Length: 229
Image (tube, rainbow, N blue to C red):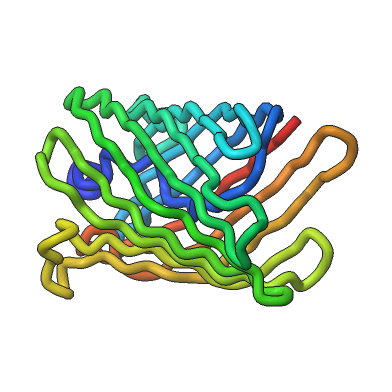
């Protein structure tokens, strides 16, 4: 079961909606945690640790290590990831646009993957919308797959947003899988700023998603806790 779930997802550093923001001159540390719960089976866990740095107002780079297992103690280092987000707009448009690039090394089969695509965000009053499309090439499968992300959250109070988010994997970018083999998940999402005083900011993003993961029924929980200084 673990191989069936992790095999196609081996190049994924987790499921988190990528959002464009300016981190210039700030160092970040983050804890990420996501799970997949197949129907009637034990959950598969992916704890992750990352370090980031804002090189300038447009470019943020991040190193991320991802573990995988059925228990926290039994999780083994699965992938090493080098991630970049480059802002293409900085307030001159009614939306934010960035370019996401990620290089993944899979320690299991020593394959590599490259994920590349646009990151889009806009605000409509108290509503924040995100929509991303990523093309991922894997040296293991030697094909390019299309992955989609979206999120809509409403500011209910200072530092708190509630809404929904979702993820999809549709197969090869130019030859989508049949509908029953595609993966689509969606569910409630929470974004919170837990601390924002002086040079330090602590944020928490979490969501619980219902649907399919690579064609298999599997609910998903995602959590991202980030500290910026």
